Structures are given as structure tokens and as C-alpha cells.
Length: 108
Figure 1 (cartoon, rainbow, N blue to C red):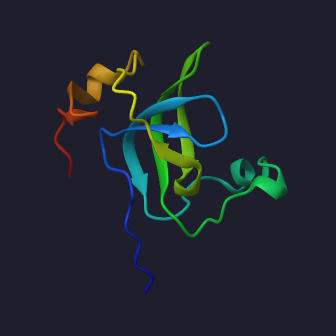
Figure 2: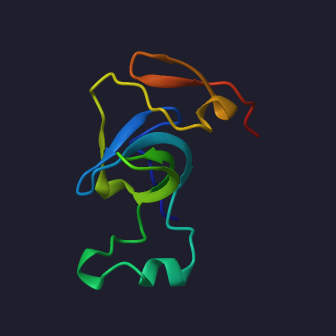
């Protein structure tokens, strides 16, 4: 049995290592759990291994808000202390404290 530990946690603000966006983690898959079509749309020389945690983010860049699905190897902590302005943030999270948002929904 393969055991994986996620490096980032729910509510944590992270930044993409290569692309100019950041976001708040709202879900984690222990291993890749998206479609093959999505995976194959990534250029082959940039495709991350499926055998690592993947994170669902409420993401933002200078132009828009969206949901992103990103491999752990492509994320780094965002230590700016700046809030994320994603419009769906308040549906899942409360206040920003110590660089992370407090979860305000009950998980099962």
C-alpha cells in the first residue's frame, strides 16, 4: 500500500511554482484524480507524476478567479500575508489568521 502525506493543508495560501497565480487549498487528492483528457492536455515535458498529492485551489491571477487543480511539486507556500480575493472563499472559509484561512464548513 502506498502512503502519501500532503505537504499543504486546507485553508493554506499557496503559489504556483511556474505560473503567476496563487490560491487557497480547499481539497486534496492523495494521488491524481482527474480525467486522462485533462492530464494529457499538459505538455508531455511538463506533466507531473500522478503519484503525488494534487490540490484543488480557489485560485486567482491578475485577470480572473477560477478553480485550479495542481500537483504538489508545482506549489510553494505563499508567505506574503496578503489575502486571496476569490469570490467563493467565504462559502468555505472564515478569517485569515497566521497565513491561512480558518475552515468554516464541516468535513465528513
